[in-house]
Image 1 (spheres, helix red, strand yellow):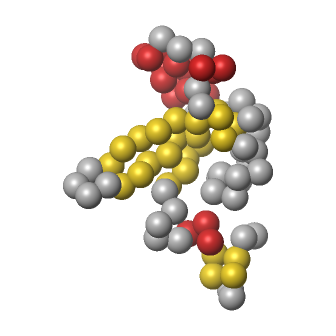
Image 2 (image 1 turned 60 degrees about the vertical axis):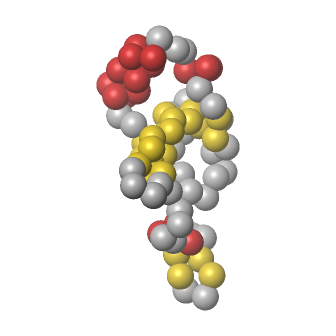
Image 3 (image 1 turned 180 degrees about the horizontal axis):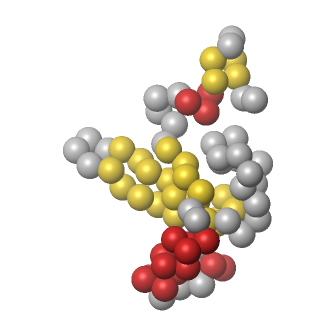
Amino acid sequence: MYSVKGKNLLMHILQPKHVKLKPNEAQELLKKHNISLSQLPKIKSTDPALPENCNQGDIIKIERKEEDSARQYFRVVA
């Protein structure tokens, strides 16, 4: 676990939320945007922010909160 002085760094307030998409959600995303898996930006499998049980080829949704809204970004685990 990634921790400093007993505090979990994955739960830091500035860390954006990372969620692994279910296979059907991933297919809907690819179909909606008319893209293939290889066209998504990559995120390394060693990234400490990734949820547990992520494998190569999984799609991750990153939710970043901004001033008055939240934005979603998608990455594929490489």
